[in-house]
Length: 341
Image (cartoon, rainbow, N blue to C red):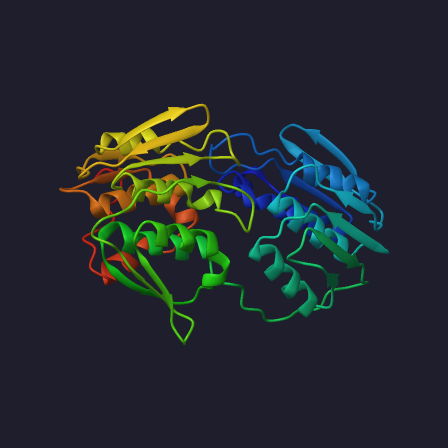
């Protein structure tokens, strides 16, 4: 089946990642334009431009992308901007193309490297994953293989901040601290202690006095945009003023009005958020606007005085598995209510 309808794609932007594999394997694909969080313009032009370089014909009509190719052929593809999903899509498509494909200005995120390692396990020939230049030699087929993907570094980072914002002590397993160096460095700046144990788990001990720290988001290995909202929640309780600069998405401050409802002192100025720390946050009814904003509001609510109710938490479920259960196990008073209850 080479069709990915709107009903499947509308809730998650990453659904566009079926495009490359479908074209590579079947020579055609019909995929609805992606949905996901409303955090700014996130076009898939780099995906489509890359597929065209590999010889595919691309059409956009009626909200769908139609891509076809008798046989993809290797080519040099230069991304005009660093794109994680674009790199992943072209990586998968190029595995089954004839000849050699070079991806330049490729994303270096651990998820890209992990995907490449999975594909190599299935018979792909890939060099340079984790660098900005990836070389793929096309093969005739990929074979089934059991593979354990890398732990979710953003989920891990979110729980690291949960410990920091509550002054708690958490041991987190299943992740790789080396994938979160930028966040770990910033948490150390705030006064938290971050230690990797011999078994690979990570111990995070929050500080009673949270020091303010500035953050600028950037592609890996820089500070991840997917941790910006959560870090802002932490900075609302800092001892000074923090400047948070979002450089990946132009509309990723939708959590700001909701944090302000909880007592945060935040002002937006030309793409930057000026966060002046307050002594305490107060519980409030707030509205989740996107995936990471949802997580930020949960973190703020953990540290706030009184009860908070977060609406539209379906956003949260797209990036976190049973978050409320995991937090409950480490002492949080949190529960999920059915809509209308």
